[in-house]
Image (cartoon, rainbow, N blue to C red; front, top):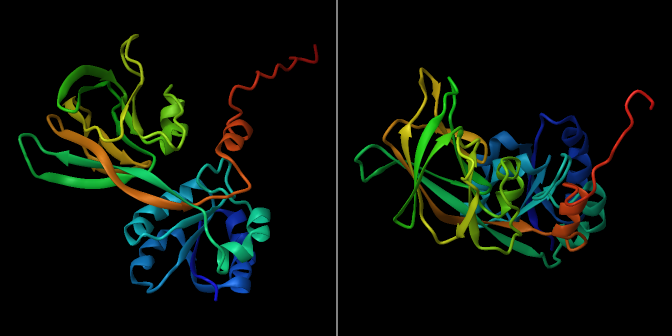
Length: 292
């Protein structure tokens, strides 16, 4: 007997909408489709009854929208990539079709567990967190309107670090090292590395470089200067989602959170994605200008 599967679709993407019927039919050919819904209704999982597998149709951003709902239930996520990169969404439609019987029937799934980060926000001189959340890719403190530099005091495992002025700070998992932190100049960590990357955003310093710390470390960011605007200002982002306004004197404490389970594609490797999609270490392409 096949698996019982929940299908979530990013219906803001025309390609995902066009593929929904094909993926639903493939699931029903080998297993049971519990329901198909828009990714904005991810909370439906909590009341869905027995589900064996969650399929995400849309890309990596669509998967990130499902992690909070699927991970506490221990449900594995299978991503179907219709986006541009697809580090988390490891299958395309052709790969899904060729592996359909194994994935949706009773075949063995290859599962990878990925660490998440937990972020807690503490008010000035408060011991009780006013906000707690988790992220698979990254925790970001961003300056926000009116876009003046902010200042952040850094502590790692109780040891005082530097005071950093700039546009903010990123703390990422190895999974998130190919996302925002990479654009900000951080290193790439392969999935098996147990670490966190601390990367400044446009630091007002020539000497502050990204640093990798152990995954068991506790990273504390003290907000010494922030931007304050009605309805806007310095903000905590989890996987790109605005979660909490940050006030002067508050602390953001980041450490290891839970984990998320992903179905991997045995026909594809991490290195293939890194080279083929991010074009890692490829030589620049020079094009003539004006036909010269």
